[in-house]
Image 1 (cartoon, rainbow, N blue to C red):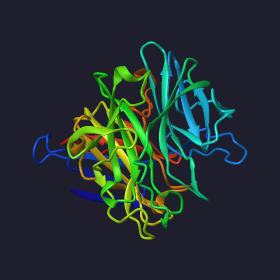
Image 2: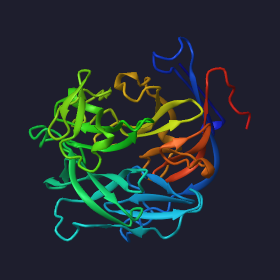
Image 3: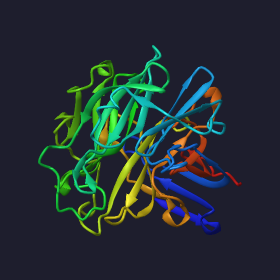
Length: 366
């Protein structure tokens, strides 16, 4: 594994070993180069103007791309491509807002089914102790491309006794959240890649769960978490074996852990690509942006060792939430699908193109 850096971080190439199932000795390459800035519309909330405070999922309906940015509540925008999304973004509506008392909800992932129904999964932060929460994950669907949503309920939650109420962490005492959801190419399963903050360090890190695609309209009780090589832990209250374990306990002042995965299928590599944050203390100070690869979504152990592609020193704003967004409108690319060249966003802002190279391909010269 090698990393080459030049031009004071203006150009970075990362050669990353693929999963063991790939040919021995081969590497994927990631090339990051500076381009003109592009910004998501962001939330239009007066308290959070222009903010994208989580993964920002997108989908297509006909010739129109739709995207959601969240900051305690989701906002939607649309346009002919990611470069021309409508502004200001519009506040979406939930069917249970009037009676909801369980904290903010952020849209982190979406899926447009063939019948036109749009599904989304939200990160929820219920009050646990003053100023802190233990996140959980819920599901909704929409018949109007996300302007209005029907809440199907909470589908992923940490064990009831897994919070650390004495945690030094600035935000969380436990929970399951900061995630992405992708359907496999055969539409047999949805895979949930979740950040887990259990009081037991053995269950901290980035973990995996899945649900049969056919259960999407009735998801409660249908999700299984991956633990010790098996899909047999319940989504609500179940335990996990992280695929990327925390190096230092999330609840210590000097925490060190990967979190906040975003995943897309890369048509050039014919492989799945994951981007990750890396926190280096209790305040979630960003250490850098990392990449990992896997050619088999059903194999949680198949992800390559994360390798840094951007250092925190070159980031701005919150420095969190990296994601790849494909830019080929003809191929209906989104945050879930991209090709050889795409945009790299962090916190809803992109000053980079990211180029994915197969073994033997050379990096671009400019």
